[in-house]
Length: 251
Ligand SMILES: [Zn+2]
Image 1 (cartoon, protein in one colour):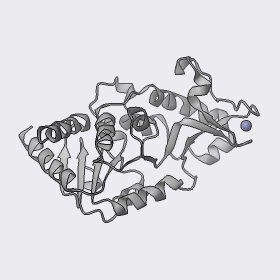
Image 2: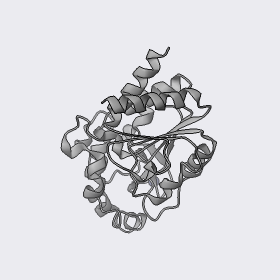
Image 3: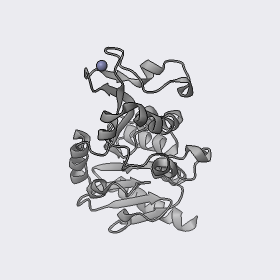
């Protein structure tokens, strides 16, 4: 752990000097957490759903079969709770040390942990929109007190009864406004903390842009390592806790 400690200190040096820090997170923030194996988003993302099949065209053609495949994945994400990465990032924002979180994750957990400015590159499972009458629904309002397992899919629009499309950006859909906002944040940032990114989404790889200081925190090598000032390989939750501890030690 000694080497990790030194790198964490360097990361905190950069954080304290930075005028504009943003975080970029992906499904790898769940790596090595205490979740049951089937509840690891970073492992099951492409095992539970085939991205080539899970498209907007498929949804429009056959929402029932779309939900049949997607429901177990959405349910798994829905059950997750914020972990140490979410908590530390929310705390950094509260202390004025973090301007925004850009996330690839669709679970809505940054917001749940208390982060205020969250740019969701791939949308969220916490809300849905009717493609027929365009009504927007908070999923929690539909599920109420029920267990997610007891909910039958597809979820139907309370207005017109047609299936609701989750507000997740599906393959075949245009990039959402959040993507362009995230790009602006990346341009403004003089430090980006890249935590547990999923490299499969090519357009996301460009988001750190020309940011001069990139700190990568991930359990394994990722494309962002090239050009990073510091690469910390380890459990992202533990590393973020160390980072917060080091910040507190310097107070
Ligand atoms: Zn409707």
